[in-house]
Amino acid sequence: MNITKLTDSIYYVGAVDWNIRSFHGYSTNSGATYNAYLIVDEKIALIDTVKAPFAEELLDRIAEIVDPAKIDYVVSNHVEMDHSGALPEVMKAAKNAKVVTSAPNGVKGLTAHYGEYDYLPVKAGDTLSLGKHTLTFVATPMVHWPDNMVTYCPEEKILFSNDAFGQHFASNKHFDTEVDLAHVFKEAEKYYANIVMPYGMQTRKALEIVKTLDLEMIAPSHGVIWTEHIPDILEKYEYFTNDQSVSRACIVYDSMWHSTEKMAHAILEGFSKKGVPAKLYDLKVEHISDIMTDVLKAEYIVVGSPTLNNNMMPTVASFLCYMKGLSPKNKKGFGFGSYGWGGQSAGQIQNILKDCGFELIHEPVKMAYIPSKEALKNLEDEVAAL
Image 1 (cartoon, one colour):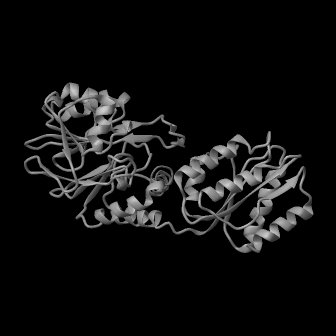
Image 2 (cartoon, rainbow, N blue to C red):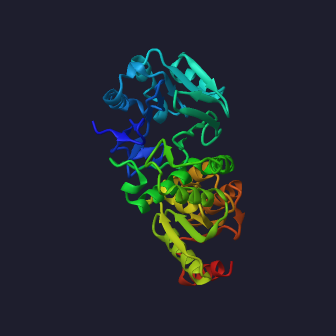
Image 3 (cartoon, rainbow, N blue to C red):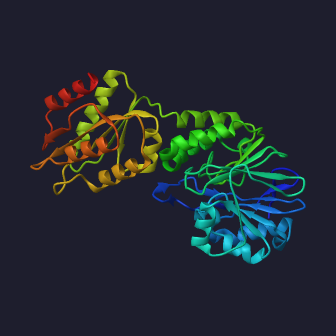
């Protein structure tokens, strides 16, 4: 197997998942990696494992470098199974290893998933000497699970950053200098919007800690390893976490017979007249996780659905449920939709946007059957005047 070296004694031993296309409802069209790192010193440490189906690949990579039985420590920065799934197989091979994880939540989570091992609980500021290398542990709870921590090696100036600064991006090249950087930054933004956004406050706190470290490399659990572009990804995380929206509008809708679609186009024209960049997202063709990448920073989120059986359409309900869970901040919006006789959908959308904490800038807009050109022009003008 090809062996990727981060330094003379630290190796990439993770796995590339070329075929994954969904992660908890988040579309991963660029695939994913499950990054793990091996430190070879007087004591040998494995930083994280991989998703369970890739356990053999992980162990084969390690075996190219050292006998897995010689591993002294397995550091589990995060309990979630795309990070820890191979732990049982690793522990079968490394029978004498201690599992280093956060106290108390890492121990609690790993025990619940995999049972009893020789756990070494650590808390913020604890260190572990491997010989020439020291590992320092920094708690980052709720970025994005309660057990989360990151691991810093000061001698090599490497931060093993767990989910922070990651991307779902499959490549046989593992460094930021070897890939299409624009693509990677887009995937980093999508990753933040769909995984980390609800925990922006906690991420800001973690970012402040990271900025105090002397860094030459950031090695996340997913995607590329940051080297030359560390300032760029830190700057982007400053932007992602500041909760400030930019003047942009997302108009998200589904339509049965094009009436709600016509309303969406009128709203788009209104924002254009207002001088606000806007984009239409038809839920029949756009994936909700791609929409959330734009929602992350857009000031205006306007959502529409026709009334179907006294409710909004299931696609719209799904989007709203997904968005509410991700808890975007500082948004403005309203609901709209066409109807035949009931007309409940626009009001239902409005109520959910209110529950999301949005500033409601217009009453819910309802239009019966096929909207007239005059009604659409009035809607366009009303949006332009907002």
